[in-house]
Amino acid sequence: MVTKLKQYNPKASEIVSDWQVVDANGQVLGRLSTQIATYLMGKHKPSYVPHMLTGDFVIVLNAAQIKVTGAKAEQKIYRRHSQYPGNLKEIPFSRMQERHPTRIIELAVKGMLPKNKLGRQMMTRLKIYAGAEHPHSAQVLGSERREAREEAAAVKAEAVAAAMPKTPVKKSAPKAEAVAIATEVVDTTSKATATKKTASKKPAAKKPAATKTPTAKASAAKKPVAKKPAAKKPAAKKSSDSGEK
Image (cartoon, rainbow, N blue to C red; front, side):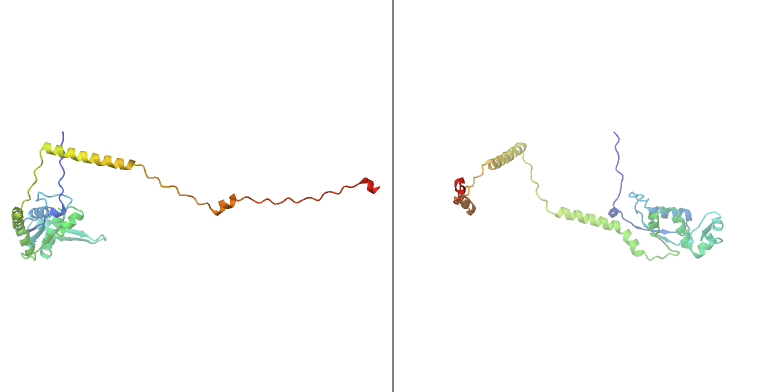
């Protein structure tokens, strides 16, 4: 029998995002970028899922002191094109480090993140600064004290639960008493149904028939019709042949 394990899918309310501070002074670009990308995606947490934003905020300090191995400082070139003919721009690593040192880490990390909406949201959580100062000290301090606050809240909740009075739990009746109660309930229900059936079967009381009063039309129809005397016809005169003669 093969058992299928349910896939872990955290809720949005269960995801907690901390603030990570990374110092780039003297570190190699590729190794540092992989560490930052891991923090942004959340792969360093057991609650990581690829379809949700489970990563942390990352603050990178001393971006101007980043290093590359070998001859990459002279050979590495950043290219961009405006899609117009003859507008290819090439910037070597040394010039980019002098003018825009934060773009070096930004471009390296961007290539290691997912190329979709989730990856763009992760990039908004990356804060890169060329020096050692940053304006996110309150957020960093809050994330450092988060575990202590959660532990204190858990202890307080346990103390409140212990102080609450416990309601007495009613003991269940023995089996014999339970059976007797069940039979009584069945008897009462059967009696109630029997009374309802007898009440429904009682003959309905007959209403007395209403006496019909003779109407004017009926009385008029019953009166004898007076017969008119027949008119007498005049007797025809007898013509006598003798008189004419």
